[in-house]
Image (cartoon, rainbow, N blue to C red; front, side):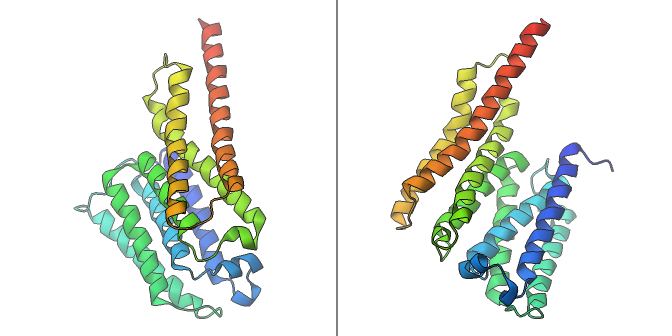
Length: 247
């Protein structure tokens, strides 16, 4: 079976991501990076998000162009692999000075479950947007420790990169809907609408949950959206000019 370009990309991202989370979960605590240790890597939210993303990437690599169909054997093979890996991952941590925690394993399964649930209704493009939103919300509002108080650079990168990625995934989802004669205004509104609404949603829920979402963090998030938006619009203008010259 030949892989499409998107599948090759998915495989590369999956391998890099899987190696990263395996390494981070098996570093001995006494050798762990200071700021990660302070954030408490055993936090169930971190396990949930890690496996939420893993589940999406694995399905994207296997068959990202289709929804999860529970009647097909490959879904159950998929579950067997991730459940076995989650259990093995927790067991192996006991040999590097970490804790083998059944609740961490349950958080892993919850992440996989939510990922598969979303993929049951959506293909990879819209699912990526939804799961990115769930990940950002969970990391910003549900973790035990405010990362900004521990390592400001991490906080800056989180808000800048997470909203950039969210906007990029949203553009990837809606780009195929634009026709060749779509106006720049229509494209601009379509691109900005959902990221801006998501940022407002995050601000409202941070107030409800009594979590700090400072002006600086809002500016960083807005900057992440703006950078991707400007690059996309400039690329669109450049493409339009080239098309006009070729007429």
